[in-house]
Length: 187
Image (tube, rainbow, N blue to C red):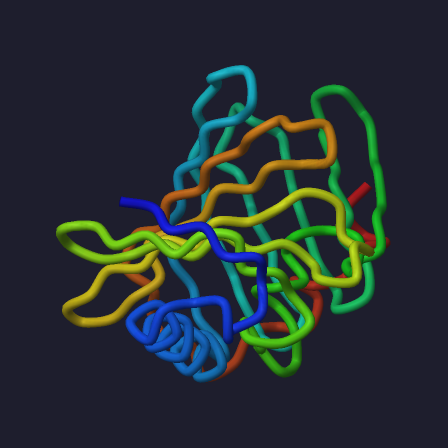
């Protein structure tokens, strides 16, 4: 059963606070990883691809053909390139819900508003939005319990459109090429 909280950790039950602390520790320890992802867009379309994550701030979602999409965060901006439509858009990372996942210091107990902590049979989810309100929308992070792992997330943008991302197993990487996170080269 979902329990709504107004945001501060003090508004959460001790069990919910423990789940938030556990998730925070896990995300803070998530440094450089790669893995496959599947995505369902707001229109119900499905796509798959490869995720490269280098915290803090950097992520690359390289979509499999025929999608033609590439999403890159360089730590300051998020660039979205659609090669099929020949479009490119760029947004400040701080104005996207991804900032909660990619922050230098992941703090789900400060600077964000936790609006829901929900227990599931095999894990739990935490829904949060940017506390100061600079980032539009919200993110629901999905975790598996045993062993603790990020399973994916659901992003809801400022217009209420929902994108679901599900992750396969994440593999630690020793080094990722800096060019993976170069936005100017994506359009």
